[in-house]
Length: 205
Image 1 (cartoon, rainbow, N blue to C red):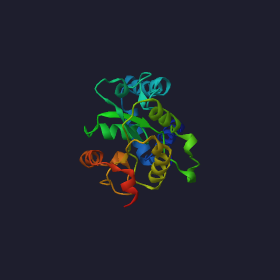
Image 2 (image 1 turned 45 degrees about the horizontal axis):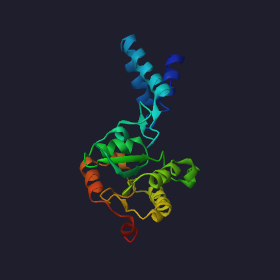
Image 3 (image 1 turned 180 degrees about the vertical axis):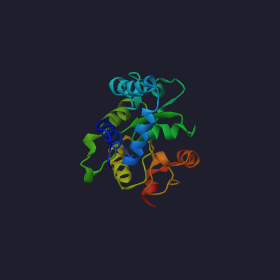
Image 4 (image 1 turned 120 degrees about the vertical axis):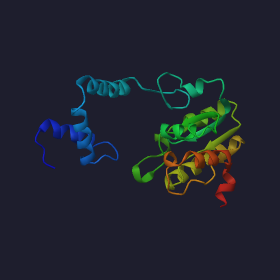
């Protein structure tokens, strides 16, 4: 792609680094910003800078938060005995949109993937074990994407948690294998949470 401006080329190159954004889309976004008022562009840039500098992760569940403890963990309306384990903040948002879950979360920060060099030590697994050990937890729901990495992580977590003698469940497979949790429609995901099954049963399928 030929550019008439080095500044334009640099801006397009930065936008193209975003996931799912090719050069043509990046160019369209950059040209859109060029046509906006200067204040709008400054507000856009400042929002991203502020996000990067000030965003926190909840000390309890590791979800993205503006404060030391996220709103979900701080809410007295949530069931503190129920933990839903997810890959990242996108999955928290997806499950919250179903309005079918009223417990707390634990964000792993990824999935076990030896091919990508990601092992258990790279995820927030030890803090999950500590929560189950130290808090009065009555059930752990393993709500991870139904793909190879998700299943590997679920199996590892099950082995780490099974000796605590609490129900360990997985979401029902209304979500197709190989899919991503964040892309499941709200009805399907909601039913998968409600009709969750003991992990032992899921292993026998």
